[in-house]
Length: 285
Image (tube, rainbow, N blue to C red; front, top):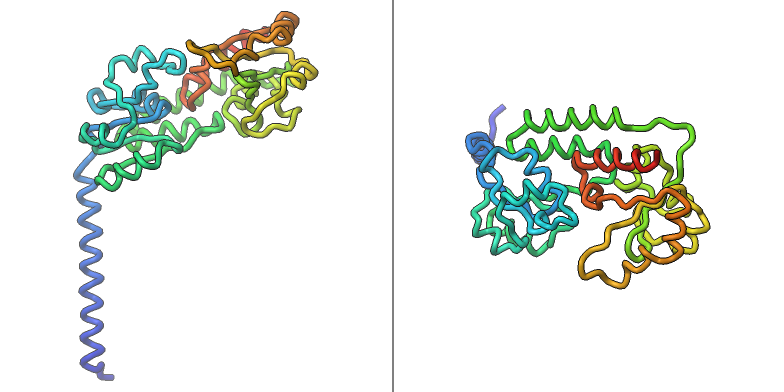
């Protein structure tokens, strides 16, 4: 069977186009492979700051977020003080000539979008809501940094330590997380997972809360938890923090086992949560 000249010409043209597309894809792959791990990494989120500091090669991480220098929320403050900070502004970050920017799920869309339009690779990591998701996050950041071996070591150690700490109890003391403005954390939250791992039952679940929300003080007092875990008060506090020292809450803490723990250990899905679990277990003894 003979193929007409126009059809043959069309087939040849299609083959050439496919060949060019394949060659371009192979060139991009080869370029990425040859490029190797990023040499200048900037983090603009508190939680990615911590994961990057844990995993990065010396000199690889060139800047972290200004929040990492806040002693109220930064669990790795001593390490963070050794890094220059940024304020998460696209223009500021671009001047650092990064080949990778680590950001959070809710980092400013303007910052992320502008950096990407300027040709900078930006990776946004999701918020961690469960302890079992932490090893995966560690390994993902390790992959991005070209530090897979280091990430595997850190993740495996976390898994081992978490298994050793996790409480398996038939009867659990009931605990309440109480923050400014009567905010608390319910089901599907990292805080709830920390409470559960430490051997407590979260009373927010009794109140029907999922994720985060407010638990009116009257309802909290009526639930009569065995342990109150209060948020820290910060300099220049707002009136919303007055509930933390309300007479009703003080009486409840006096009657039951009160505990004011470090907020910084609860903020991010990193190995620091192990310290929060251990402190809770000590408070409940």
